[in-house]
Image (cartoon, rainbow, N blue to C red):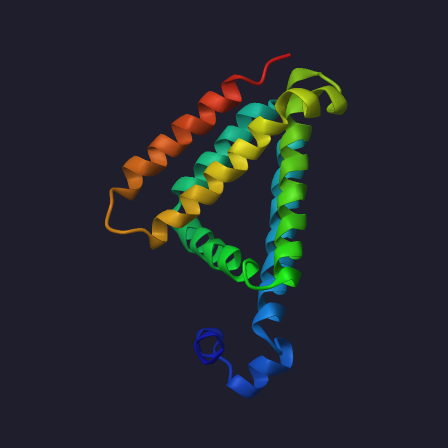
Length: 166
């Protein structure tokens, strides 16, 4: 909490007024990121080419240096969710929203009903989520060529998306 307060430019006492616990911080992060994800998916779903836009957003998210810190932060949220059922539930709600949004993009792109897309492509949506989460682990990994691994992850994601067909 002291490190976080210092990073926020606040005293520890003032920081505790806003975030009385680590769980409160994590909930605030989840809520903030859920809002950002919803905005991203709203833009994807209203674009002329939802699948192409999804690919572009994923590529930007996995390769942008600014998002590397966000991805690393999600590694910490994942770790905290293993120790707190409350945090695990909040993270799971966000993941379920992301999975639902992936399926909505697939439906918009293929013209298939959401029910049909759910039957055909739930595993694809889950795979995408796993791959994106895997990319978040790179910032914490041993010295490896992060760019090469991210390129492989993006290639795997694109291959999975290529399988989404009407």
